[in-house]
Image 1 (cartoon, rainbow, N blue to C red):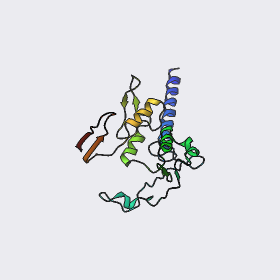
Image 2 (image 1 turned 60 degrees about the vertical axis):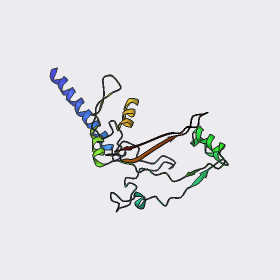
Image 3 (image 1 turned 120 degrees about the vertical axis):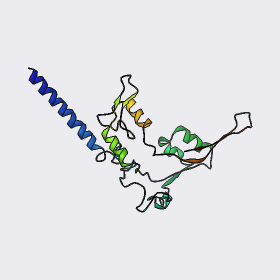
Image 4 (image 1 turned 90 degrees about the horizontal axis):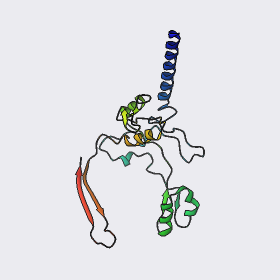
Length: 201
């Protein structure tokens, strides 16, 4: 009887391992490397993810990216303004519709959608390693274990996992802002501007 229980446990663990391996294998194949839908949507308004990225070959660190940007010659497909905003209202927020109607010269130019955002190889590898390994803490909300930088739960099963994915997203190796300047307009009834400057590295 004990042998049967051990055999059943071994089979369950093997099946679980096989499922996790299949899930991890979907990253970069049927899904993007970070777990997004790779295919286009049914009507094509959201295109398939482009694995090639947005830069043409030849770009090197220190060069302006715009010179090698694949889509720099894209043209606006149509314009949304006060004359036609009701036609597109279902795809806009209530705030966008209100602004367009309030300001007659305000407009939105709509360009082709592109999906090419990815992450460095080491982030993709860490993300794949997190499948079946990353864990939410016993308290139900903290991140107990994950390999970072990477997406902890590329195949999320709960809202808290989605929140941790957003919190732990890869944002680059470093940030260098030589001259950061913020200006806030005066409060209602006042005339003083609030100004703040800083350098961040």
